[in-house]
Length: 497
Ligand code: ACM
Ligand code: ZN
Image 1: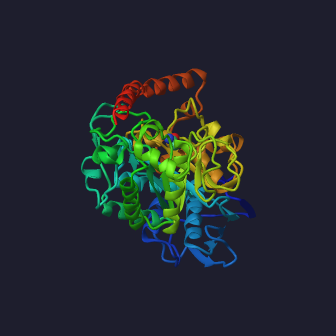
Image 2: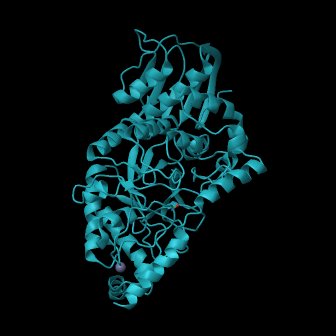
Image 3: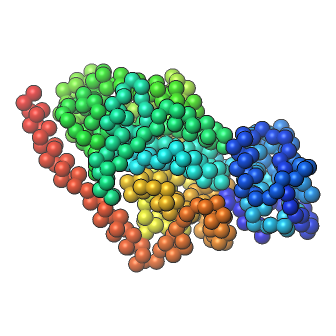
């Protein structure tokens, strides 16, 4: 039985015959040079004179859909470049698995969800353009199609903005991390971003940038103190943990800053999705801030939470005016009734979001930075997409404790295989996935992708406890205590105003 990840919708046997290919040549197609080269090089078969893979158009097929028929040649039917690309990804797995005994079959396949994402948090740790390209290849192997780049954080600003040069000159440098206590820095120039976007597009992947506001903005505030309610010198954050100094939304100059940044984002990122963060926004400063209070009263709002909803809606509108579908995190959100229904969620838990479009980023299945003791491979495999208006799924790789590609692979795989299967097929389960696990490991090996071995990916009780203990010990940042003292300082300043 053929083992494929993600599982195709339908595999039919045509006859008992088998075929072998000793060399390979692609017929005329619409694929990028990069995508064709990636396929040819991974097949490791010599070139043939005549075409062995033939591309035919079938206008009845939808975007991303394809049909493969094997025989003396392999025929691909599709109606899109992405359909051609995904057919080749399936063929690659068949060639690798069946060697010189390719079965006589027809595969009819299309995705269950149109949004199949992978998030890289490049804020906590910077990942080079070469690393991002590696991630793009990992995505295409799994038929994922949206690269979500988390680019602004408390611990680092990672993208060149012409209008605010300090953001990268200063904001991209962290004196130390709470993981290895070493300085850390890095950012993407405009040219780097173009390289990433072009490379992603070559593999039919869209790029969704994230500008995380109004919280998680300490790196920006470290550069431009006046962005926050009570301006004072603050460094780029070294430590993990929720910061209390957030953007002051009562000041027009902060709003202008946000629009200016978004304008440059719109220039750099042509695809229709944008992420505007919205997670973890303590309201301590807003409650005390004269500008935020004045804004709240002018708008007739009762609480600082309502002020945040107003802010998110307004920024979503600005994105929409520029043709973008905006998303925010539903993390720590209890009630979404004041958020416009066209503001999408990356949905972290099973709240009722009615008709609101969302991407499933379950913290119980898709937060792939969490230790396997919290989210085992089995948990990820058995997760069912939250009910409601789901556009798709996303693997979320936060990087507080992921300093490099080696660790990124270890946390991402094999769990991302299950998320990809859910996104593409609509269904994954541990019962079906475990039958393919040995094959999947061999396919990851073949592609030089690291992973957690079975005893780590589905840890026993002791191993699970240890992985959680290690993780939580590192979580104990001083920030909690620091925040308490800091809050008192700000309260004094506010009293004297
Ligand atoms: C989040 O986990 N802070 C969205
Ligand atoms: Zn304020």
